[in-house]
Amino acid sequence: MPRSGRWRSELSQVALSRNYEYPEGLPDRRAHKLLVRCMNHEIDSTVTPDGYYDWRPYVSSLMSGSGCPLCAGVSRCTMAQAELYASKLQLRIVAGQETAGSYAKLRAECLGCGRLMEKSCASLRDGKGCWWCGKRRAASKQQLMEETLVEACANIA
Image (cartoon, rainbow, N blue to C red; front, side, top):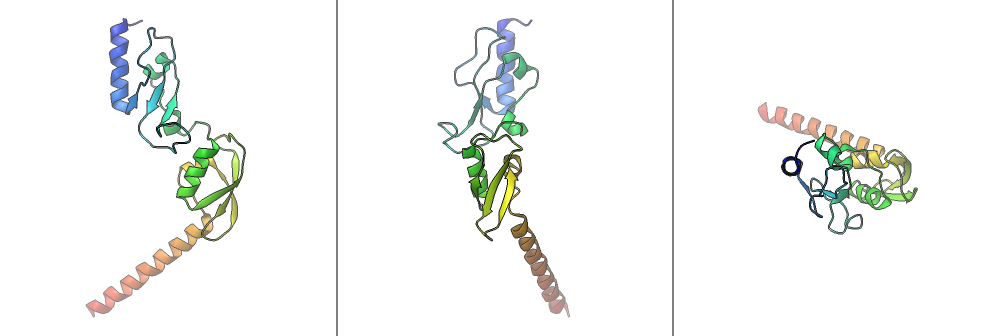
């Protein structure tokens, strides 16, 4: 087992390379859990007081390469997080469990077209919104590209 100074400096390097903070400082022993704050993504302030994701891994897990569960997409999703992700996608959560797992289905309504759909928190986190509105936007983009191409050809001739 490395001496105390060595693993402390290794943890400092982990914090620098992954953009983590240790709000409570480093523990006395390597076997302890420590509070780690991931600064890579902001979350709604109802989840954590200052808007960042906190979790408690063992020091040895962190040093062996384990990282932020939210960045990896394996953390459990709270309703506050699901509602935040949905609002960014123009969706409104209608029904769901209070602490839904990443792949538990939540019932959502599209604010654009009014359709109801089932979405997992993982798909909301990945930015997958309303399928029907997405198809409509893709069709309008295609039409715009075709009109631009026709205008360009007309200007050439």
